Structure formats: C-alpha cells, structure tokens
Amino acid sequence: MDEAYNKEQIENDTEELEMSFLDHLEELRWRVIYSLIGVVVGSILCWIFIDFLVDQILLIPAKANKIKLQNLKPFGQLFIYMQIAIIGGIVLSLPNLFYQLWKFISPALRKNERRYISAIVWFSTLCFLIGIVFAYYLMIPLSLSFAAQFGSTSIENNFAIDEYFSIITSIMLAAGVVFELPMVSFFLSKLGILTPKFMRRFRRHALVAILVLSAILTPGTDPVSQVVLAVPLVLLYEISIFVSKLSQKKT
Image (tube, rainbow, N blue to C red; front, side):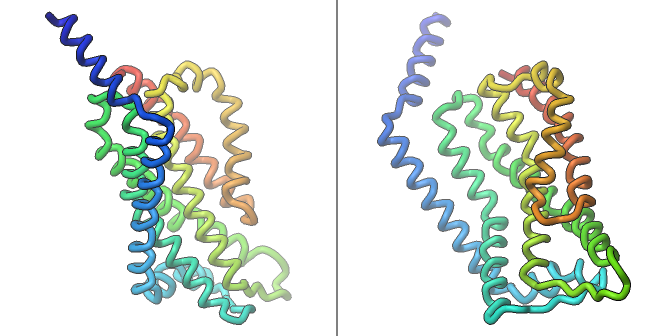
C-alpha cells in the first residue's frame, strides 16, 4: 500500500515538473515582467523621497569625513538622482525579485521543498540588506576616510559627485551580493552540485578567489574596502559550509 502511494506521489511530482521549452520561456517572461513592475513601483517611491535619500542617507558619510563634493556635468545631479531612484527601487523590490526567482525555480523542487519558498525569500532579502548595512556603516566610512586623508596636504581632495555616488553604491551592492553566499550554498547543495567535503577541500583556493572577487566587486576603490570586504567573505564561506551540511541532512 505504501509502495503504491509512493509510486503515485512520484508520478504526480514528475507530471508537475515536466514543462515544455516554450512553457519555460512563457513562465520566465511573466516572472521578468512582475520583477520589472516591482522595480518601477520601488523607483517611484524612492523618487518621492529622493531628497531624504540623498541628503539624510547617502551624503552622511561624505559629511562625516568633511569631503567636498562638486558637480562637473550639466544635468549631472538629475542623472544621479535618477540612478539612485532606480537602485533604490531594486533594493525596495528585493522580496518581489527573490520571490519571482524562486517561483521560476520551484518546478524543479520537490513538494516538501516548495513550502520553504517564503522563508527563503525573506532570508535572501535579509542577507542582502545585512550586506548593505555592513557596507554603509563599516566599509564606506573606512574607504572615504582613507581617500580623504591620503596624499599631500597641499592638495585639496574635492570629489566629483558622480564618482562619489558610484563608489558608495558599488560598495553597498557588492556587499549585498556577497552576503548571499550562504543562500547560494543552500541552493547548490539542494541540487547536489555542492558538498561540504568539496568546500573544505578547496578552502585554500577559495581564499585566493575571495581576494580576487573582492577586487572585482569593488572596482575603483581603495585596498582598504577590498580587505574589509574579504574578511566577511571568509566568514561567510565558513558559514556556507555549515549551511551546505544542514541542507544535505534535510534532503
């Protein structure tokens, strides 16, 4: 009786997982549309509060380090504000973005694994936001302090406004992506691609890759921010080994 039930359960799961190539494309198209709608709504909300975002959040690190900013391009501030609104819209719509991603992936998951999609979405969002907070309160102040104090006292360090916002946004987004490492480890372990044994075996290689990745994710910034990003990357790698181990136990 149990064997017949299990066989029927497997057949039902197989039928749900079988989708044609065109079905996958249609599903992907709608997931992309829903994601873009979320980003547009988030960007509009950010544009409404753009002055607060710029003056009370993004310019605070510059003010704390007494850095003088100047706009060197016509309509430079307008384009910067638009860029900030779009990036802010992406951050605000993170739960929706992760939800659409996991809903697209869900047909490849078992029924009991689909129950955790909501938890995975919120955990992924939380990891990304923790990365942004880490960058804002630790990486950016250290980077700007280094940049502002380095060099001759005879030369005044005035930063172009577009370069300033490019640096801080790239650092925050890079940190957010990096803090998703445990979630990526969980997913790859569920697929059987990654194992704790494999991660322990290539730990030394991972350390070298982490240093390279830190330099890639923080282009144009100083070595201080790259090292500061590499340290949590190492810790996240160790956490990812633990997450991979737990994931395999539940499989």
